[in-house]
Image (cartoon, rainbow, N blue to C red; front, side, top):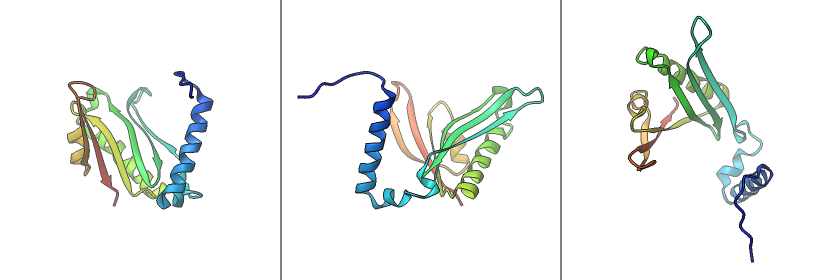
Length: 147
């Protein structure tokens, strides 16, 4: 018999993560090959665009892992959209990931009302789609091979 609990528990989550990683490594030669390499760890990657008064006007938050750049957040203030600032941030993140962290690919998730066309213009291809996530919205996963 098992007892099921519903609670946030950072310690148990850490154990869960370690056990899943051990299972994955044991079952996948590709995952095992990451062990002991710089690509084994998630390394944060953040870029910030500040105006003359040090106000945040754009930013990118992501991480690198497994030879991939994962873009989690990319935001540009309304008054700076269309100026190329978002593209500059994304390209810099891609260069850093490729040149400094040996990443070969990049990926991002975005909703239909956000920026799928922006990413497609920069060479990303739609690789996945989830309709009604949340209801009435479509989420896209896009990926790009870096150089």
